[in-house]
Length: 205
Image (cartoon, rainbow, N blue to C red; front, side, top):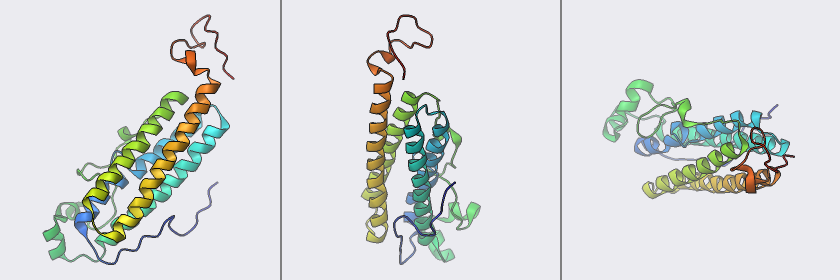
């Protein structure tokens, strides 16, 4: 059971609208490497993780990704709040506006809506943890790209916070992978699986 604190993990306070920037930022809501994908990936994978510490790791990080999604949505909302029709037309936000008005909708900067194909749950701890490591680095790269495109310090500040959390998550998943490999005797695990190969000499704890 989760407890929800009614505040953002990191403050978002944007003083004036900027729909052009919103169309970039929204990729970290509904894009392939965004926070919605991250939360769904980890909170799904946790069920099949064989060790309690991995279940806990995925639950903790998956829950934090929900908080990050909340931050991204707050940024997009504040960047598109009270736009005039003239601002919408001038910024190129009209294509989004015609379908969603100014509602925060899970879509990539490319215009593709969020889809389940963005995430994977294999049920194998090694496969899933490698998926998670790659996901954190792809999210970090997306934040790098956003920071290259945006000058507004009110937007850059929470984005930099989110980028740093991706780095921390990558480190935590790396630690989880190493512990898992040790328990599976990973020196031979890829070449020989005792579930269906004989004489592996591998002990799974």
